[in-house]
Structures are given as C-alpha cells and as structure tokens.
Image 1 (cartoon, rainbow, N blue to C red):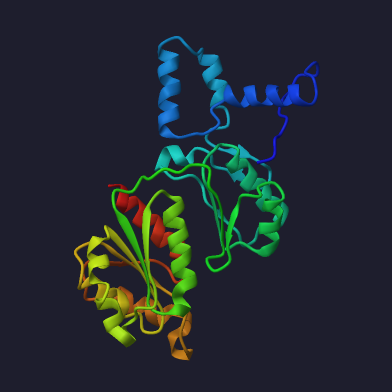
Image 2 (spheres, helix red, strand yellow):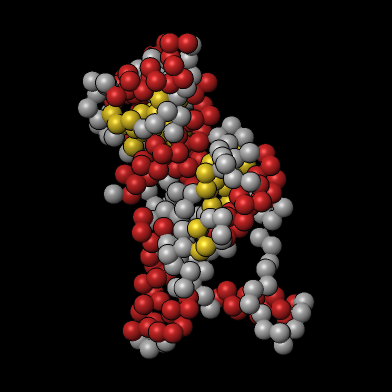
Length: 280
C-alpha cells in the first residue's frame, strides 16, 4: 500500500522523517477496528495507561467515515464480525478506489464484488497486491491470514456455466477466514459425478450449491448430508428458465428440509451466511 502523509505538523521534516511521523501517527490510532483491539483499548483506559481523551481520538471515526459520496462503515467488523464489503456496480472508478483505500488503511482484508476492469485498474495503481478473479468478478486485498471457521465450507456448482457464481461464493468464504472445498460440474444430468464425492460432502460443515436450469441439485445434496445447504439459483438456462426464476421457485419448494435459498446469482450472500454458520 502506498504511504500517505496524514495530519503532519508544519514543522515536521519531509522525506524519510515525515514517513516515520506518519507511521507513528498510525500506530497511535485504532487503525484496525475489531472486537479484540477495541477491548484492549478499553482495558488500557481502565488501567490508566490511556486517557479518555486519547481513546476518544482513536475512536472518532466510529461508526463511519464520511467521504461525501459514501459513508465507509469501519464499525461493521465490531458489530457483525466481518468488515464492510464493496459492491462494484454504480460506482465510478475513482470513488471505488477511494472506498477501497479507506478500508485497506484499517489493516483488514478487503473484498469487492462485481468489479469492472476500470475499477480494478484504479485500485491496482495503489495496491499492486490486490487479487482480481475475473471469473468471480471479485477484487481482494489480503492483509490478514486468519481462520475463523470451525470446519470446511463446500462450494458446489451444477454445471460449468454456474462456476462464476460458485467462484464468487468461494472467494467470499475464503477471504472471510474459512477453509473451502470446490466441487464443480456435478449436476443431476450425471448424478454419478456427485455421488463419487460423497465423502467430501459429508466432511463439509456447510454447503453452498449453485444451480440453474430447473435448480434440482440442492435438493439432491440436501438428501445426502446432515448439515445446512444454502441454495443459489443461477440465471443459467433457456427461455422458460426466466433468468433464474425457475430455479429459484424449484429451490424454494425443495422437499429437503435442510435447504435454504438466497437470491438469483447471489454467491456472495450465500457464502456470507455460510461463514456465519461455520463460526457457530
């Protein structure tokens, strides 16, 4: 990440000295807002190691940082355990890059979904390490390598045409601190492909199943395992599939009681819920 000089007094030297001042400034602030750091700060106040005024200064950007065009929610990691995620569509490349940078400054992992080529280029001017997955349409900056999930999340696609949605789910689950197993192209048109991976299915703690056409695969998977199955209808199919509505209706009417359903093509939402389940 490029170094920024923030709130440096006029008398501060330029060059290397200024960068050191900037680093000290960052070290003295609550740069990464999460439950453990917040608790540590409160313990320091109770012990008299940090004054209430200093603590207030560290927390002054809570609950959000107002950029004018966006209010960046730095407090979300404290409330729900997962930092804010950026949804790409509708944002200019410049605004997208600014939001990405403000989230990255806090030291957390950053995830953006449904990104455009222009948005990716704008971010990579500042963050060369940002990982773009063209299939998933995601952009990720990994700054922490922590495992929060208690088990493995299995990501399943019925066909190869469903892989973009499944891959979005896989990237999301990984960046949220889960171990992920991918199992692609195992739809009901060739059921033996799924059954040959029955052991992998049973080892997963949560399963995300992405399917288009008639949307039958989640019901089949649900009948094979005793864990939550999150069904993702995809917009794959011919005319009467109605861009995923047929699969959505089929999944909502599943006879497998452990199947729940998210919106059409919403691999992100399915993985988010799977991540929360995997932390319980």
